[in-house]
Amino acid sequence: MSLHALSPTASALKTKLESFVNTRCIPAEKIYDEHISKFAGGDRWTTPAVPPIIEELKKEAQQLGFWNLFLPHPLPNHLVSSNNNSIKISPSIYLSNREYGILCEVMGRSSLAPEACNCSAPDTGNMEVLLKHGTTEQQAQYLLPLLQGNIRSTFLMTEPDVASSDARNLETKLTKIVGSDGGIRYVLNGKKWWSTGAMDPRCKVALVVCKMDYSHPSCAAEQRNAKQQQRGHQTIVIVPMSHPGIKCVRALTVFGSDDAPHGHAEVSLNNIDLDETAVILGEGRGFEIAQSRLGPGRIHHCMRAIGLAARCYELMLERTMQRQTFGKFLHEHGSCREMIADSRSDLEAARLLTLACADDIDQLGAKGARDKIAMIKVAVPEYTSRVVDRAVQIFGGAGVSSDFPLARALVGLRTLRIADGPDAVHKVTLAKLELRKAKKRMQSKI
Image 1 (cartoon, rainbow, N blue to C red):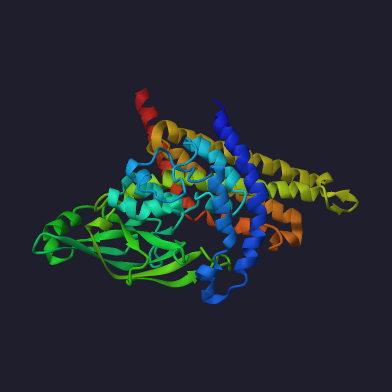
Image 2 (spheres, rainbow, N blue to C red; image 1 turned 30 degrees about the horizontal axis):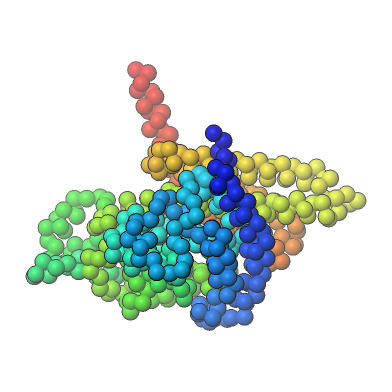
């Protein structure tokens, strides 16, 4: 079966989605930017700053059947039955990772389409965590409103004071305290940054990656066991953004842009009291949860990146047929034709590699596709960045302006080489897996 193959139903949905993205989402980007440009300073993170156009697009996406398409399987009955909202939270069709990846490419052509379809990060990853690992109570309180699109969320992992690509370095602590009656409570303290969406006025819940701390006298036995372990202390807890102990310290800028009203924040966590209901899956299960979150999530990131690069590539082609230099159209110059050929090759290589990875996840699970997951995380941002960089070069001064999506695309794709772990970490993972395979081959020959 071709990696591009879709069922008739999925194919029809893709055609509708392409029309929605091209005729509604892309034109709406200018309206969105014009609205947010009217606000300055802290006002850019208030409810009035959220462009109304996004809610209009969300309603259209719901009616057209594009809502929550990332969901891999039917929702639990208790969520469906408790959904009193007019919004149908179940997707119109359940797609494989490969099929959804194809639709992700379409969404990626517009910065607004993923949110309009309730398929944007970090919400999709957080919803997948709550769907796979959350308790019934956690799902009812947080997953349901996320599925409805009524709230947004953030994922707090990266820290400013340590190299967070190694999760063992994390310093945010979850101190466990056992009461005299056997009751358990926790106190969370730490500092995070690059917390995407934390300052969004619609963000109501944070998933926080922290390290277990058994230093309290009531946890003496667990403290002895913890000293013997090198790994397994990472835990993920749910913290409502309304908690007085959580504070957004400042908005961070990416190459000078604050990406308001969603953006990224530095967050302080001060003496946040939590009970057992805040812990997802259990103490020390954070690494396991994070990995289950990142596998399919990287497919989504990569295919959206390919969609964005494809849009820039098409703009580049059009530009070469509209502009002339030295008595020739740009596309008539040999150097320009070479850039076109290289860009088309990079796009197809990125697309095929990602779809092959998605197909492996469908067939083998995320664990069985670890090599390809590492490959796409390194290769796709590099390939797509090259495509957009060439488009910028063809456009000249216009390419680095805000008149076209090229400059913003280039910034986003460069950032993707750091987000969800830097390239170097994934190259190490891939090399280790390849060496392990080679060792097995060598042993089989003995």
